[in-house]
Image (tube, rainbow, N blue to C red):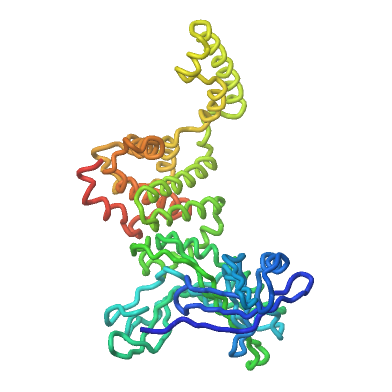
Length: 484
């Protein structure tokens, strides 16, 4: 076993906007490989937790200090979870840590050079790695890797490379001491700069710049990909001895769900597919919708209960279908002028029908016994302007040439009734769950996930199914004979 938790006590301070300082003893701990562990506690000596001190903590969520080894540290947090006042006049506050920067975080002392960002990702296998032995604690022993197994390309933010890399730690496996290699997927970005750089600002900028990459990786890996460590190294091109290095860590509570086969194999990604997908996503006119849909889609893979997985899969496909159908001009049944005239006519008809019913029966009977609410009917009229979801899905499947032959057995059921059945079961699951047929929940989930993936990829210009991992066929083949 390896001891990977680092613990520090050091004097720190909170500086407010008036440059007033509140000094505190800081206890900080983090795990080298576990992003869920990043904790901080403040202890104030002879200082009560009055309202002004708590307001400073709320308004200035930053602690600065220096670790015992002399390395600067900046802690950013989002409020605090609890506070305690001891009889010895000590006040203790537990912070909700967001990120930490270990190392220099101000303006670097040179104006030109190059910088390398090594970004460690969570749950994003990039390349296939040949293993010689079985899995051990935090990795494997005596790992063997193929040469040149990274995926690299030039981008507007510099040279980008992604692969699985390793760190080595001395540990113990069973009763034996061993050199344990820990495998991590890392995104490495190399840039040049020609003006003075503030380290903290540059780390925030690189976070923004990699958002598109992480979204595409989430789609490919069928899970939500995040970063938890960024190591930055700034080098002076005119003086090789001048350099600055810093490390930023983000606290995450990772969900480690089942391992799924990625959407594409490494071979296809290395041939340029990953670069092409990222470029297509960055240029997409509906980039925000794709981001939202992929977020829902990955959630449908990662949640641990079937019903929530299915409901969020419905959200994923409806979000992409709604946007694509609006852009294609197939979202509405009528144009604005036609709908306005129809709504006026139908509103008048509703009023006339209600008045007629009132003449025949008492008002209380019409409203309370038969549920006749004319004002509510008028509000619902707006919904008839939208084309049925089934029809829009059929149009988009046809437009994008989506292959559905492995999603449904189209020799036994037509595509239109097949989609309508899924929508009907969706409505029952939400509005009438007592009557839902549970036998269809899993198969509907797989079909929705597969169709959503194919719509997103088709919108990005990729529908060569021979390059896909055939998720739907592999998962549905054993049960499709019994369930249509």
